[in-house]
Amino acid sequence: MEMKTIDIKIKKAEERSYSIAIGSGFLARLPEVLKKDYPASSYIIIADAKTKNLFGKRLLLGLRQAGCKALLLSVPVGEGSKSQKRKTSLEEAMLKAGIDRRGVVLALGGGVIGDLAGFVAATYMRGIPYIQLPTTLLAMVDSSVGGKTGINTFHGKNLIGAFHQPKAVYADIRTLRSLPDTEIRSGLTEAVKMFITSDRESFVFADVHLAKALAKDTGILAEIISRAVRIKAGVVERDERESGERMVLNFGHTIGHAIEKLFTYTLLHGQAVGVGMLAEATLAHRLGALSPEDLALIRGMLKRLLIPASLLKQFAPEAVIAATKGDKKSVGGQARYVILKKIGVVEIKHGEFVQAVEDGEVAQAIRNI
Image (cartoon, rainbow, N blue to C red; front, side, top):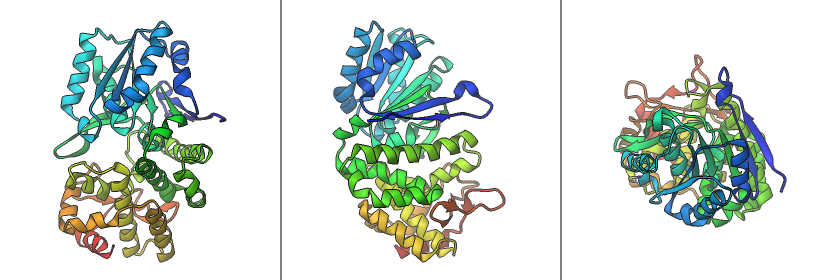
């Protein structure tokens, strides 16, 4: 399969620019690539218990066979590992192993591992390099790109963290073969989110080719990943630290994160965001910004992705709204929302990409689903 490479060039920060490689078979070739392009005193592979067995042990062996010093660390599977406790345990293990400032962290796994390992790299000895090795579709299209790292707290998701750009991203499409259908749908939901806010043509492409994507057609998945990554790369280049346009990428996340919090982080992220997208698209229509035709297209796509709208009915709208108050986009305790004008375009008012909306409007939008 032909490799696709996408460059991210951070304005005024050339040392933080990097490339995202999308292709097949990277992990097998990675030890020699790392040794040549990213030499290190040691490589610290951080994985979860599943990716450790699927890919981590083999990568560790390959690095050692290539003459590199390497360490494999793992945490339990799931969102619960994005915690201060797990971060501290990883740091203690690295300190005990004598990892110095010339070490390179390899984040091998999905979004949880990317966020956690990236945050460890951001703070270990005041910051060491890391490379993203996403193994889930969701991580490939979203969390591995952009340099957002962090952990969760009782108060909400990703409230403690840092912007720390990776040195590179290697997305090996072969790793997607190990994913269950629910994970594929979760990742596709995140890609569709980017298309909904930024690229109608790609939304149509995903709609036409959705059946093949769900069947794990590597060519179609590579194209969808590339389109999503190009969108995110462009936004990150223009707004590295989420001071403006980058907030567009949070469409569906205000309510999505609230739903995750109410379910104590037991849902797949893509499912929660899909429900959030449904609610926030309905809100945009209710506010008169989004046409009924585009709302119907979005609802149709989310239905094909098996987004469980019924999740919203398990909580009173007031409980959902209360859970949005800790969102990172909130100002003065008031949640703000990305408002769609049409598929591919969001509303910008006074230079702002997110808007404050009355709680009553949000509650009614949730009831209308």
